Image 1 (tube, rainbow, N blue to C red):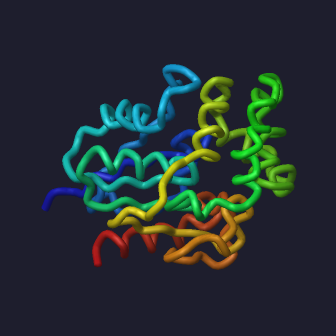
Image 2 (cartoon, rainbow, N blue to C red; image 1 turned 135 degrees about the vertical axis):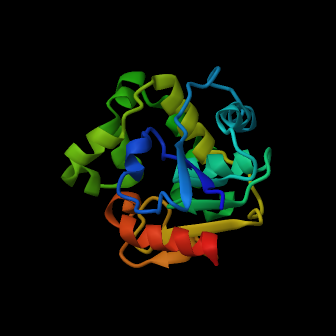
Length: 219
């Protein structure tokens, strides 16, 4: 029996290492790890960016798994290719699942005023999005937040804040933590809840998430 290909897309500024604690059977699945590319320019559309990412996908009807902004991106990719299933973790399915804080930033355009040197010091910048808990896990975040390109970071933040998706796509499995401070659970609809899961639960709740992923793909 052929193995199921799974393509993983990490969260904003993160590398494939964030998936290292998942425990999925290599006898059932084949694993492929997508990585962030630099945008062609600061105004590149997320649709065009997703189209470039599809060039890294070599299988028909793969499973796509994305975390946070990676979850948004795999949804855009799924509009361009046929997929077996799309699984998003600690992410959103529509613009309406973003909190008021994100909507205010989008309307005000204040995020565009952040200086480049502040963006490059991403631990400081990420505090705004992830919260004070980042300070307590500085070593962990320094390891996993590996993409430091200024153009990419500004492009990514713009596209999180200004994502235009009115309705949730079909064929989406949404796994979300009840303690997520970036995308609070109160704004999230139709998700599989992970009790106590934070925005970085792909690291801290990997065993539970692995079980949910396997069940979602084999039921």
